[in-house]
Image (cartoon, rainbow, N blue to C red):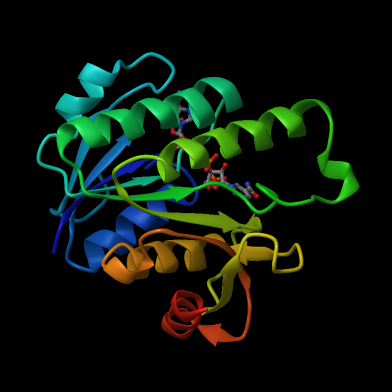
Length: 213
Ligand SMILES: NC(=O)c1ccc[n+]([C@@H]2O[C@H](COP(=O)([O-])OP(=O)(O)OC[C@H]3O[C@@H](n4cnc5c(N)ncnc54)[C@H](OP(=O)(O)O)[C@@H]3O)[C@@H](O)[C@H]2O)c1
């Protein structure tokens, strides 16, 4: 059991991650601008606006935290890039050891033609910068690059593979939360970045295979 901070805790994926981690027996610090606690006594909340909160303030919030999950998304430059960079910096300074970052399928690989230009270049550039900062940090990191996120019920079966090796596809937010819950406790997933879409393997089976590839 660990104490895990989740940024983006009120989000469609973030709240599922919070619930999953609490269900798995972790103590969870749920962080967003207007956080809500959920039902479990294991869930505490903290408010932070990633466009404003300083690294020092984030360090205080992250005091005593073992692992961070970053599932926030907002303004690509101010939240997805600069907010993530400040959280990574603060996590290192606060003595956090583990960091799971959610970016998106299309980072670090060719994208379908409709995902180029304007907003998309900014969005993918921001996500790529956050990945770069985490990969070069001292944290034990895992990066998940999900395809299009769906709100339908989780299937419990996914595919995980290194960047650029899967066809562009989709995955449910339930399954992303389940994968986060499974990787956060596994030291052997540190140092890996994987695309994540729906597939035929159980979550543990997909992780096992991805770790060994
Ligand atoms: N949508 C997709 O199809 C897709 C595909 C691949 C990857 N992704 C990525 O997957 C992750 C989850 O996506 P999602 O669609 O489930 O997220 P979402 O529902 O849009 O949730 C975003 C979260 O970020 C928080 N947030 C926004 N601005 C903030 C700020 N200034 N300071 C602090 N927190 C802020 C929001 O909380 P408050 O508003 O309460 O602060 C919310 O909890 C994101 O990283 C996203 O980029 C999305």
